[in-house]
Length: 339
Image 1: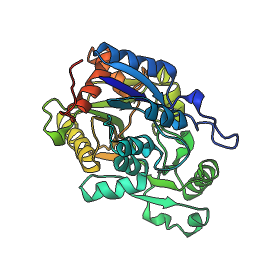
Image 2 (image 1 turned 120 degrees about the vertical axis):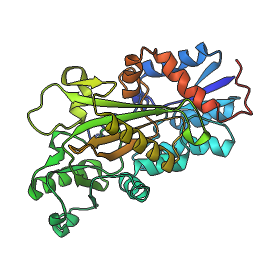
Image 3 (image 1 turned 30 degrees about the horizontal axis):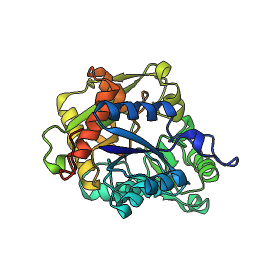
Image 4 (image 1 turned 180 degrees about the vertical axis):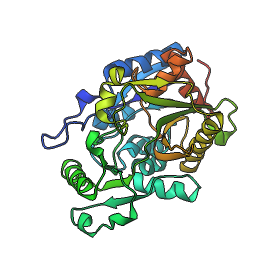
């Protein structure tokens, strides 16, 4: 089978000089793309580099592709940017891995995602959206229990999440909201901060399709030094080897782990995720997993949370990629999956 690879490389995107310093954080490296291509070839398929943006449009029209393995984050600062490549593929009738355009667009809109999941019974911290500085003066801070946590409403890869994200007072919250509004030029989500365990739950497979091999992997992120509330910030992720330990299996009581897995699958299914995803929680002292956000297009690099779990299980990177690919291809029985 001829499998195209859709991706966006950091070096292929030009950041605005006026933009934040983490503008390109979500894009991939050539090393990751080469590893994906090698895993696809090892599975007996031909791997074809498609890239992203206008290069992707040109190549997908010129090349006879059977299937696309998609990790493209999309271009621009649009809240629906992750839906760009799947939208083109659906227009052309080409099957692909991962979530569809609607799921990807909804999941990058954090306030909308929280509203949807609340109706499904998923616990998520109380929140409010600030679209402009005028909203700060109009806010009823008495509705919140402090501290609170501020982050851009339409970003992933921890963009905008810094040590200053946690505020103990309305004045601190206001300063952080203004900083984020000026840097990211989009609404800011402020939610009550849950001072508990940070757990990210990877999922591979398709429970809605009755896949008996759905994998649900709760991974606990443990700070090496804790002098205050732990924030899994961009600073921590960029220096994770020195600042945190990843615990898998997570050393949490079995009922808590079961609740995390159940809530992660509820998120996955209610949003229409497919093949693989990662769902982030904070677990409060009473064992309640509080939903923070979901990534239906999680990273697959050698630094990704999914690969960290794979290593703990004794898996190779190749096996991880081929597991995601296998789940995606299983949704298309009409395709010849034999090499």
